[in-house]
Figure (tube, rainbow, N blue to C red):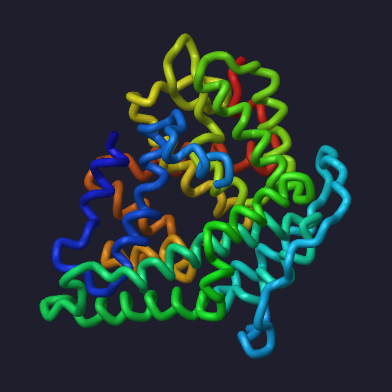
Length: 337
């Protein structure tokens, strides 16, 4: 509950400086919505089941590759290395994302379709924010000049990353097509989908505990931070005695307990290679939308928790306990015992 209350402290009280507020609010609170609305509704069920590259201009690469039929790739073996690291490095570079998506669509067997979907979804949000400005939005004459500059730079950086995509390439139909094709061809999408299927049953108290451990084991064995980010709170959420809560180191904590587990999970992708600095999409979106401009996710969490004595230290203690378990692919750490 502290996570929800303290986040509100950082919402900018003046008018939004740019047109990014729609995107910013969406990305800041999406994790919180997952916490309080755990079971998928008709509206959000589809989302739950989907969840330095060289700059290639539209002149050089007018259309992204179309999806071609291909044989199914074999299931992942335990600890099998997956070359999605190349895509992660390109994403971390903070550069234009078109070249990354172009190559990713040619290599679903490396997790390319998953990365393409991730990037195209983010750029679709960015495009929506540009196309649908809020009434009355614009520069705030009372804004601190240094902060206003940071917000403008963040907005420009987001626009640069997604500048070269055609509207048809970031459409919902195109993104859905890639995701569905990846169910048979992309090991990251397949593992994510398998976990989500087990997750839904677990929240209904009808799930097989061993099935959940197995699905989570596949996710942790992959160890890709973008997959961890997409699953978010669902990595540790479960049901025990009819009550929903988090499982950490085999112990169950109800959602009403003050454990700060949800905030620690938000930091987990940073321990697996995601570059969580000021150039990361999440951090840029908050800044461009007029919320808060931070050096990285850790500074954001520290600011968010500073009004609660000891809260940031609790978050970091949980994070430092969870991070090794994720690196060691220890699924039992997040499972019932």
